[in-house]
Length: 272
Image (cartoon, rainbow, N blue to C red; front, side, top):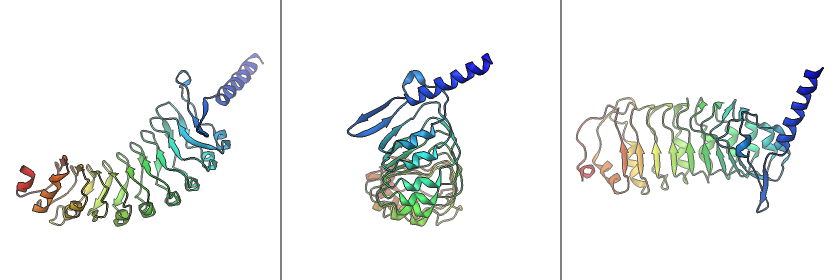
């Protein structure tokens, strides 16, 4: 009986602490954060779904575990959600498509699995999709490529596979495209319409088939006048570098091509 009483008291204490986790109101927006002294391995409480005015949600770099709290998708005003650097598991719920005002979803460095739900196409205001260092599988949904305000897709170090969709060129506002360290295959599509692109990372995949056409997409990148970093190392790219690649030297300050099957001479424009 005494043990049951102590357990009951502990349970009550836990509920009180969760109820008083730091919630502040600034500029008529709610921000939810766990104070430093309370960092411990806890699940994100489903009750947060009752905060219907919640707009900014920061829980990155804690020790939170469990699955993505589906009830958070009830927070229709939610614009930013940072959950990176925790121990979250499970899938990205399809209900996330109901967050039509959402702008930034960041869940890097967790143990999230499953596929990227195609319902993400409903989040027309999405700017940032950052799910690096997780266990995502399957492919990039083509529906995602039609988000007109998307600026960052960062899915480095997952288990994504299949071809890079040709429709990625429709995401014309992209500045960062990070597909490195996955299992993508096939030819890289024409990316010339991504004229705001600054960082392109495709390294450590299975792209190309050691043929002369593998590097043809580089010609389209000459239209990307803001491109600064291009990482293509450790794939299966073959063929030779065409002279037009030298035009990239005007803006690109980092070019990684190691670990491929590229042959021939280095364009003189890259030697200058």
